[in-house]
Length: 253
Image (tube, rainbow, N blue to C red; front, side, top):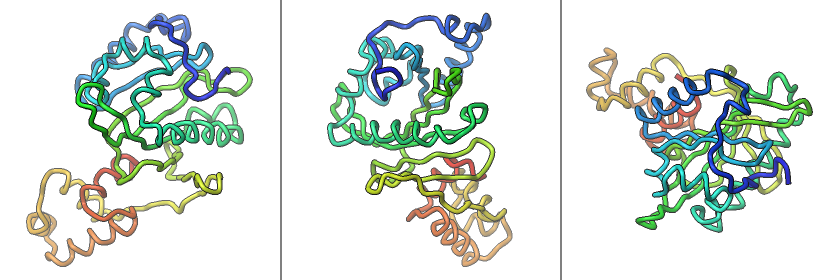
């Protein structure tokens, strides 16, 4: 059915120029390929009007052990083969819940929102499973308000388990979490980090120890520990690695 989650056809890669009607398509593709060379995060573009992948970056292979051409040819079968059965419901629920959420958003604002959810993916070669994060945002919306084109960013999950489904606004700190049991979106309070807390996150990402941060920030050892505990409480995490990942993913810095 049109616009149903993961109902991609098995068509091969087509030029985005036909969809975007953009004569600069080759430049757009070069930008995506350049970005994929500089990060482990992978990209794909999905055409929901024709139900197919339009583009999958080559570095996607590091997550799933399959080439971009293979994924494009497999279409929806990629998910059925690469995602454990227990997690397929998460993908279906996330996409359906996102459509429900966007129905209440004005068409001109739909491209301002980002859907994020976590699930396991199995590597085709090693058969090992990794917990990954998908972030989707619409690129084009048709005259009826339905998502026509979307881009997806794949990275390692910042969470400890699968099933976290969230929606964020690109500029605001508005944040919604989907309750899979009761099937509704719950708006969470804004997360606001203090200047010192942000600095702890950034220094931790650079490998600074608590003692080194205390010296750099001209604070006591116990003060840095206090900032870390405050971060853990606000971000609902248990360690500094998760705190850094959450702060970056949720664009809190």
